[in-house]
Every structure is written in C-alpha cells, then in structure tokens.
Amino acid sequence: MRQDHLISASHLSREDIEAVLDRAADIDADPAAFRQRHAGKVLGLCFFEPSTRTRMSFDSAMKRLGGQTVDMGPVESSSVKKGETLADTVRVVEGYADALVLRHPSEGAATMAAEFVDVPLVNAGDGAGQHPSQTLLDLYTIRENAGLDDLTIGIMGDLKYGRTVHSLAEALTNFDASQHFISPESLRLPRNVRYDLHASGAQVREHTDLDEVLPELDVLYVTRIQRERFPDENEYRKVAGQYQIDSETLEAASDDLTIMHPLPRVDEISPDIDDTDHATYFEQAHNGIPVRMALLDILLSQDR
Amino acid sequence: MTDDHQLRVSKIRNGTVIDHVAAGQALNVLAILGIDGTSGEAVSVGMNVPSDRLGRKDIVKVEGRELSQSEVDVLSLIAPAASINIVRDYDVVEKNRVVRPDAVASIISCPNRNCISNADEPIQSSFTVLSDGVRCDYCETIVREDEVAANLDVN
Image 1 (cartoon, one colour):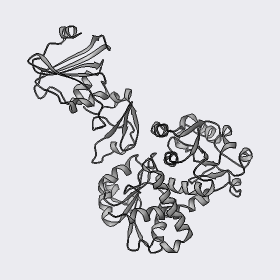
Image 2: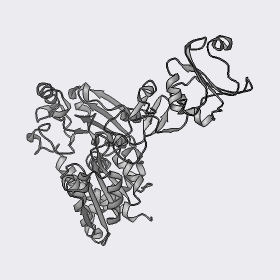
Image 3: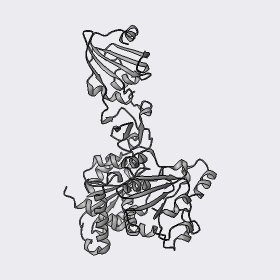
Image 4: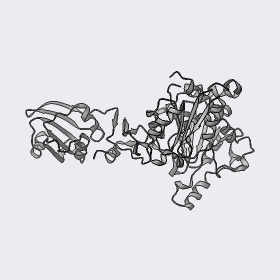
C-alpha cells in the first residue's frame, strides 16, 4: 500500500486492493504461517460508536497474527466524557500501540486523526463517510464468488448515509464493474460520491425499483434502511418495504446471483434466503478475519 | 466604463481597486481579505454599479494597500470575474485577473454540521478547489460555486 493509513477507499489503487486480497488468500490457505507474524505488537482499538463485528474482527485478526490489542472501552467510561478532543485522544493512544483502528460518529474524523499520529491508522467508519476495511472484505468476497472484472453489481438500500456503500462504490471504479444503485429518491448517493464516480468514468445507473435490473445482476449488495432517516413511522414502513427481498423476489434473478450484506440486517433480507446458494453474507462476515489480518500485516510490516 | 464608476466611487491615489466583483459580493470580498477598517486604511465600496460585462457589479477600492496575487486569488471563489488593479499616484500600474487557487483554508466552513472540522478540535477547515466548487478535505462534502458565499466563515 502506498500510504501508511487506510482512510478512504478513494485513495486505493487496484494494486493496493489486490495486494491486500492476495495476502488474505495466502492467509486463508495457510493461517498457521502467519501465527507469530506480529508477536509483540499491539493494536489500539478506539471505538467512539458501538460496534460488534468490526471491533471483534480487528481484535481477533491482531491476535491471530500473534499480536495483542488495547481497547479504549466504551466512550461513557473514557476521558472523552471529560471533554477530551479526538486529536488528544489519538495522540495519547498512539503511545500505547503500533497501529490504531478508529471508529467515530463524525465524518472526516479519521482524516483528521491521521494528521496527529505517526503510527498506521485504519478508518473503521466515520459517520456517514467511509468504511474502507469493510470494502476490502466485500471485494474479497466478490472476487471469490463472482470475480471483480466483467461484474454487474446492484447496490441497494440507504445509499446516502451508508458508509459501506460509499467505500465500495469508489473502490469498484478500479475494476471493470457496471454499478447499479437502487434506492428511494430520498436516499440516493451523496454528491461527493457521484462526483468521484463520474470523474472516474465508472459505468453507473440509478434505479428506484430492483425489478428493473435484478435479472442482469451477478451480485446484489443489500444495506439497511434506518428508521431514523424518515420523518415518521408510516413513511419509513412504506419505503423500507419496497427494498426488502425474499425467495419470491429472487425468482427473477440469475441462478448464480451472489447476495451480500454488511450486517447487521433487520428485515431487508428474509431468513428464507439464508439457506439458498445466493446467501453469501455470513461468508462475507467471516472474511473479515483474513482480510483484516492481511491489512494489518501490510500496514505493520512497512518500513517506517 | 471607468468613467462611469469613478463618478460614483472616488479615485484613489495609491492602493488596490478590485473591479468586476459579482453584484452583492463586495462585503464578502472585504471580509475574506480581512479588511474591516480597523487598521485605518480608507475603503470605498460601490454596489450594484452598472457594468457592460456583468450588468451590475460591485467595486472595492482600498487606499494605501497593495494586495498581492495570493491574497486575492481566494476571491475567485465568489467573484471569478474580478480584476485587480494596483494604483500608484492615480495610475493603474498593474492589472491582473484572479486565478483559482488549488486549495483554501479557514475562510469557508463546511456545511455538513457532522463534519469533524465543525467539532471542537484543533484544526481549521480546509478545502480543495474543484472546477465548479470546493470539496472539504475532511468529510469530502462538495460545496458548489453558487453555495460558497453562503458558507463563508470570515466574520
């Protein structure tokens, strides 16, 4: 990777991405070879927002590389509660760790934090901004199941606030991928992501209805539409209901369709899909381990 | 043209005339340049002056101060047609257009209230200049050219 940090998927080149995915495949093939790779190193986990899978998978990935983790713990019991700035918090914690993972509710938090630290920093989600390590495991899952070139992908749900969507869409511009975005009008992609997609010359189409595009998709990436994005319950139910899928929806889909979801899901993917060959979201979540191991291995191995 | 606006705003002996400012932006021009009269310079402002090129324009004259190109380039974001005239002994000795800078810091605040640059952190706002707007270096929010004036943070 060219840079010391992983802040935004828009900074990643195809070579950067393939380096991580290839390393993840090596780890998947022979995890024992990496077991002591970073013995003695410590990863700092700074989560200013709740997280289950991202926090646990970084924790597990570091330990499987032979390293250890220190966790800031919940914000309620930390010095943040006393009014400490993020800039001060990361400057203190970098003294305890060889690399940092940061999740924060404000957009741009990781960009700012990276200005204040010398150790590698991974953005594990900044508000409605970016979530690039999720994207790497998404790309790994896509590569394993459908291939990253000559790909037709549908990305559905909350495209406006969904940080996994923003990162994935930008990263896919490095590949020969045709991207279809399916959402209600009010949750379309934000201006800056459209700008980047347009500037990269990506093949992009937008839809309000999944039926328009479902039969041609190789991958359908579903995200959750959150209640708090709507002014009232009725409006939310009406809109969210149009972006839920079940086995009946999939009758029009290709037999090879891969269905992904960053999880947690609520009711946007019916459990009756879980046992079909389409369902790839649990495999996707499990891929968080080899991909985050690969990412940490590359960041921690750089000559600094 | 020159005669027309000089009837309304008096000539200066030495200093800078910022001409062809988009109508209504003169006070923003002064704010961006940090000119508020407290340092004693004489400042004349013409607003909504008839202009062949712009229909209506604003004009700003600052006596006794020669503004540098880098000082005025930031004006290109709100007044892209502005011209900068350096005056010495009543003569225009230098005439320049504003040039778009690559980046601007602190004069614009990010309109995204959830951007870290709006939190209580030890940083200034920072934007990359695009062909038709600016982009926050922190949260990547794009502010279109016609929205820049509404997001100035200079007062």
